[in-house]
Length: 349
Image (tube, rainbow, N blue to C red):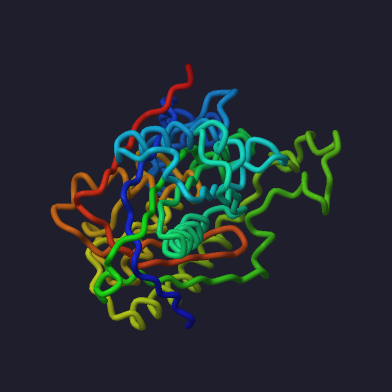
């Protein structure tokens, strides 16, 4: 296993937001499942979901988080040396979302700004790349992660409707003088299995299958521009491949983990994953039961939700994300109890 190590960086804060449009899952699922709606909610563990109102973009969510984060960490936009945006639901195909938020946040012109097109596994990738930039530049890097994936979800699709939601986040990473401290070394690992690429996908709209009017026609409960998910195949990937791979990662890093913040695919799945890794359920941070599965942003949403309550001291946390591709990322990072953490409801005026 290839383990990527980096020190001399820290997380100054994480701000996350979920739409104020909170949906009761059992009520919403009755149209699809009838009397079985309650059983579906119990099996996924997702009681409510947050869904954006029409006209809300991915950058709207993430800019709100970035503005909150910069203000409450007393960070001037001029201090930002790079901005990275993780999303698979950009505002437009062109330009890239990092350029959009660059202007909205009045960031310096002579900085790198780019998107990372990843779904559920994206936050861990973004965190590692942002850390590399912060270490190399000796400055602050702004990592944005968000998706409005319900815009690509068919209301008739029994696989996606029970779990998917929307959210935006912002993470501030900076360099620090902690190179000498071995216990402050971050560790990362990554996993890719392209043979699973068809199990969680949007069939049309890319260069392989450019958009046509016929892609808006519903067949098999969804349009070709909607997310298709084979839930059983994804579960098998997580329960078998990801759990074994994460176990190997923990064994090779030899770190004592204080908390586990996994991607909130659904509560049943992460409970099984935590059990296989021998991580106590009360040490496993959760947000999906309340906010649903918002893609890769579930990890920073989960941290923002739980850190202020559970971090009485600095802690080591295992972050793990997994999904489309098939792809997975894992990291062991430090969270300071003195850093800024906030989770708020977003409402577009």
